[in-house]
Amino acid sequence: MSTLIVIDQPPYGTWAGREALDMAFSLAAFDQSVSLLFTGAGVNWLRKFQETSEVEQKSVEKNLSAAPIFGVEAMYADAAACVRYRLTLEDMVAGVAMSESSSDLFNQYAHTAFAG
Amino acid sequence: MISGALRANKFAETPAFAGVFAIGTLDPYFAETDTMAAIKLQNYTLVITGAPYSSQAPQTALAFARSAVAAGHTLDRVFLYGEGVHLASALSAPPSDETSWPAEWARFLKDNDIPGVACVASALRRGLVNESEQKRYELPASNLLEPFVIAGLGEWVEGTMASSRVIYFHAGG
Image 1 (cartoon, each protein chain N blue to C red):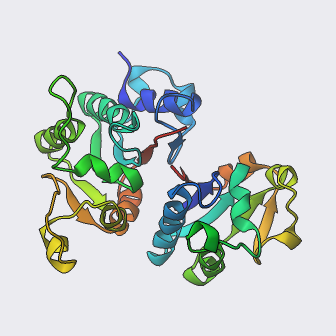
Image 2 (cartoon, rainbow over the protein chains, first blue to last red):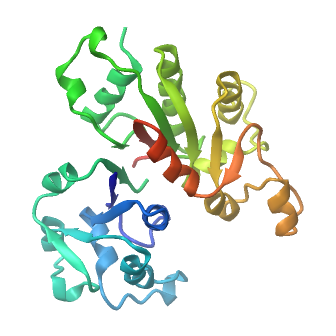
């Protein structure tokens, strides 16, 4: 069974995205097929060079770069959201693929979970 | 009368419905077969990520759970994640003219013999501990309400594998 975890909220404002990421890592740890989709303000997770010392949180960049190592199969960024937030693949962490149609992507997965 | 399964599908079609923002293992088949005879019994895992008294998620989930059980469906387990772990607090003490959602949920789980699991990482961050975690971290108290237990995300993974549908109840907003 394949799962798509959707992160649609920006990092640092709430804990929901981190906990969604933990869900993805947990599925991968149990050898379940899992991928991530960043959409809406959630695409800001993917920015390179995040500086978080002022908000006293750990940067999510390190967590994301660990995703392929933990067995997360793919990381997608919603193309329209990237345009809105002026993000190109060059601005983002390695290993991200653009998704032109989230609905097509949803159809490829048996199970979908959003960050709270 | 509307069944739990059909109701779940209604939620899927109206994402603005209070507290329900994501539905797992969607089956569009139900939208086209809108008769009682076509309803197959489901085994649900419910995931609650919204806290009581700051979101409607626990109430919406309980209403869904009651309807599902009444319609003959089964609940594999209820998993509390993120802010949802506050639902398992034995120290919640709302005013007497308000419903105690932790107590209501605990009664429902006991009456129907359904496992209720709070994610350990979410719980420890938010001050929700059982006796063994209290000892491990040398904390001054424990506050886990029976019959809830504390366990890892593996319980959620197992739920997604064991049940036919997984439904998420978020705070929204």
